[in-house]
Length: 245
Image (cartoon, rainbow, N blue to C red; front, side):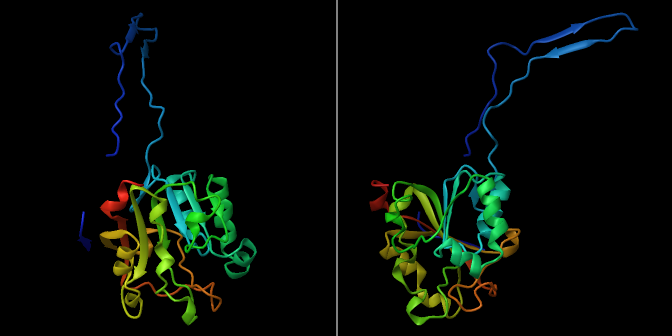
């Protein structure tokens, strides 16, 4: 299901200044025939995609659990040089809470991903490494802060990423849209953050091989939680903010 509200790949041609040269030398029936062809090759790598994401995009992932979603994208792209993946926890805490993160972190490092820990969505645009960066897509999957009332999903700062987007960039928030999660009022929240809902598409875990969603907080944090009535909310910059992006 796709819900749209407000609102090419570059084609590369391989040309040659001269016609393709083809040389054919004729020999007797007992001799070989040799053919020489001038071939034109492309120096640019082919764009690779998975769902809404492309190897040509500059991607920031926020609030990763065991980094399995980041690793899934990296495998699809066969590289992670276009990605920055972050976690709220320190690396030591992450290793305690999500033991499954080890192979994913190793894979991301090998593929060239910049991995940062202790990055809070509340003030990540002030992070010394991130503050000078702009992104095409910022991904925040299931920003469930845990089982504490003072760390709930109603926190307005969870998607304050407007200043880190390129002009046509998007913030993608994967989120359950049933009770009590819809009480976060994510669309209204985005408007206050200078964004608007561009598109809302269903989220299926099976579309991201190897991804394991993890609980937030400290209670059963290494376990998954049911993903039903899930959607990816795609937010873009409101028109008045695009000139400064």
